[in-house]
Image (cartoon, rainbow, N blue to C red; front, side):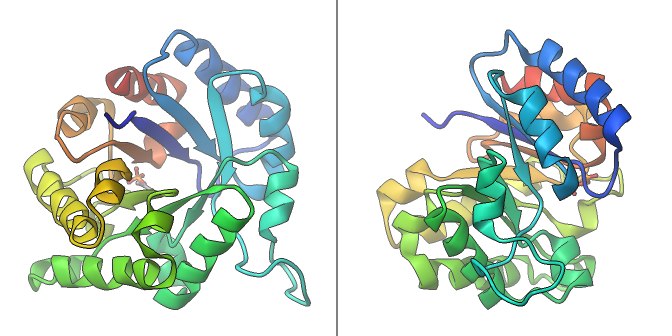
Length: 250
Ligand code: PEP
């Protein structure tokens, strides 16, 4: 039985004052929800704050990106071990905004996945098709290509040590998410592709859903057999919304 996981992706929002208010409200809200896992991925400068406020609670924290390298002349980059220094359990890898805005390729995303595991973090590995690809019927082809890049690098046993997130790009930030049935179909496709290589790994790996997950659709999405949690963007910035999604997972 896979335990559900709800992760907030704060993107580039927040400040010291608003973070404190939000984190304290989340801690209070999810304190008694013991049947699922919860985490927030905050902007890198606030990892120290997240660690200070969240340690000894049932809310984990993580980052939204990292370098695939451990050290070097990479101005502006952050190494995996630096995230570990601030207690990160998770790091988002291959978010569509980074794939699109920073040209992150499948091989780079796969290298980051492996680097995160090597440093003891769980990568949250995002896959998903653009609107154009969706409308051209290319969803499975695109998701398979993204998934295979990681599978070819670390195999199914490596993959299942991390977390997958299927986020149709056309659903992110639009308020119009995939229907539970459409989402389930792609989640099932992903799990079957892993099962083809390793049934145990496929049964173990958690596949989160992302893209306009809100209180209104969370319970239905989370009731699907291959949806093991949610990666939540905008709704994770509103404590009551995020806590309500966590309640649905619990
Ligand atoms: C995200 O950024 O990963 C995301 C799912 O965003 P939103 O929930 O705002 O669509």
